Image 1 (cartoon, rainbow, N blue to C red):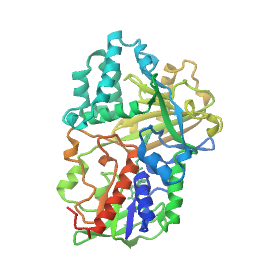
Image 2: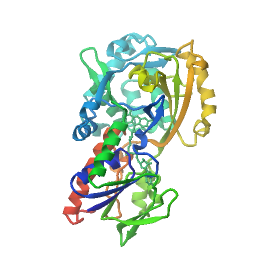
Image 3: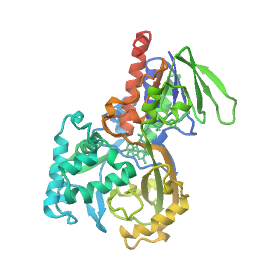
Length: 445
Ligand SMILES: Cc1cc2nc3c(=O)[nH]c(=O)nc-3n(C[C@H](O)[C@H](O)[C@H](O)COP(=O)(O)OP(=O)(O)OC[C@H]3O[C@@H](n4cnc5c(N)ncnc54)[C@H](O)[C@@H]3O)c2cc1C
């Protein structure tokens, strides 16, 4: 088979790896001049750093398995992480269950409630029983009080903005499962994974193996159209940067582009189209500071305070060695924003001017002179908003156009999106495509 793949992120490359390993010809087209999609890197202090902070959890078995298959399992290392929460004008350590008991921002009974509540959610095995309720409703009903209002509500509002009360409860359930899985030992200390040499290690290895198996990866080559003949995907029309438009025929096509841009590539019937347009995405806007001093000693800082104009602070060098970044302390200032939000429209410098005065809340000594360099990244399809009863409307991987598949982050459910799940999905798609071919494409819906 000859398969055309649109997108060289985690999903597209995982599919290309499995298909090329089984002797199929894969041709991957990527609009950006780099591979890795949302998990790609930029040079920071001479070392590669993800455009948006990235780490793995211990139950991320798909990416752990893929790294083993690629012969780079030994490159994944585990690090203790330190988690904090900023609330009521103060930073609280919230790494372990014991920290929660000491969280003086809450009355003692609410601290106990908070801990027991997380255990209760963790014990729920069947997320389907939660599907018809929003996280906001469920948390109000089953936790409520100060514990919800001070801890979870600001986090939900910070992460999802005006959509906070639409998020289905399975999202919250899956977050709790993941975080518990990454806790170790009786003290419940969290460990997080990170590949030596950044996530580039995984993507670079995928690329070299795919190419060694006669696969092709074309960068700066957006697909502009899927050609469909008699209801069957036949060819991809590509527009290489600085080159002429070209047409290439395939036995089948996999698209990994976001749901909002897929309809630009192909005409789709209303029912399927409405499933795609029914999912709204938030963009991630990330400012990265290279600094001469650390801001805090926390790796992951949740901001549960609506007066602070960002959602989280991730201090990379509080988990990983600063020598990897030329000796600088690396701080991400993160926000998830609607693309209509005024903060999304701000320039890098406007955002920096807005954010910096708030950093003294985390360290009163913070001074602008600590900053050695500033980077800015915006990812438009960063976080799909997944509402209630989503299993009933999730778009099928087999699209209404025969031999045209779709695999993007809106099809990851009930888990929240992540490299692990895009890889799992990409490998599932490789199996599905091969199975469909064996069935002479008869099992198309
Ligand atoms: C700020 C941030 C933090 C994150 N943190 C983590 C984390 O800690 N751990 C974790 O595991 N995950 C994390 N994620 C999520 C993770 O990065 C993504 O879920 C995953 O990388 C998505 O992979 P994908 O292949 O499904 O999609 P993408 O990475 O979006 O890949 C799709 C690719 O298609 C390309 N494309 C689009 N249109 C076209 C076209 N017309 N022609 C050709 N190519 C096209 C795009 O350029 C892109 O490369 C984070 C994401 C963000 C934004």
